Amino acid sequence: MTLPPPIPPLDPQAVAAAAARFAAQAPADVRYAELDTPVGRVVAVMTRKGLARLDYEDWFGGLDAVLEDTAAKLSPRILRGGAALDPVARELDEYFEGRRRAFDIPIDWTLVPPFGRRVLQATARIPYGEVATYGEVATRAGSPGGARATGNALGANPVPIVVPCHRVVRAGGLLGGYTGGVERKQRLLAVERGERALFG
Image (tube, rainbow, N blue to C red; front, side, top):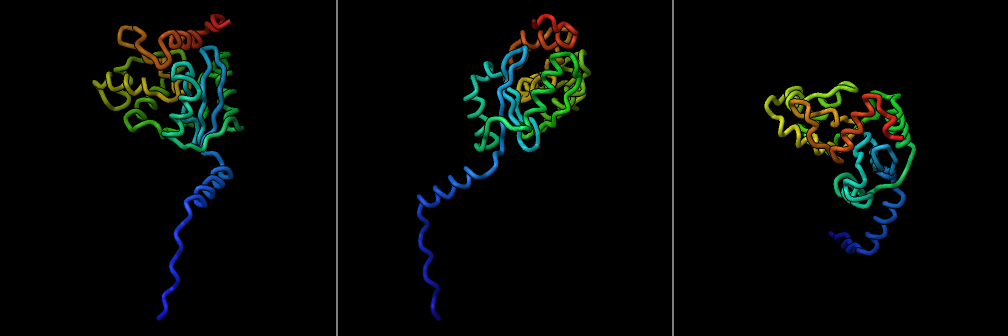
């Protein structure tokens, strides 16, 4: 019985070249765009499932920091622009112009753990122009008494504005914290009170 000839070892350079060709030809997993809003520039990150991130660029540390974190957590195959981002830009414009009270953009919850997802989904149900307390959101998310954990989940909200964590306040009406700073929270609440003239 004759044995088949041994398989020659793979050439590492050939493997690397093939991987580079695939990466160049494969479609992007993630698309991003920088968008200007009345509360500062944001970086919108879309996957095939939906909007995965909407970062305040200055708060996160700049575009490079957002893309590096996105590459590590979602995929390194990232490209700028694309038609998938057009609805994000349009709906944000409509929101700040007072013509949109709820977002229709699909959300990719990949970056959100199960408890955080429950908190953010409860937050998304707070009506436009209204507020709820951390304790109320915790209860709606199925964790009565979990106001502190709820605050942490809201602080990690990857899609602020679209998932309106700015509508969550402390008991007694104090604003509490916000991803992007309390001034932005005040301004978003002002938009929903019809005070858009404050934005020039």
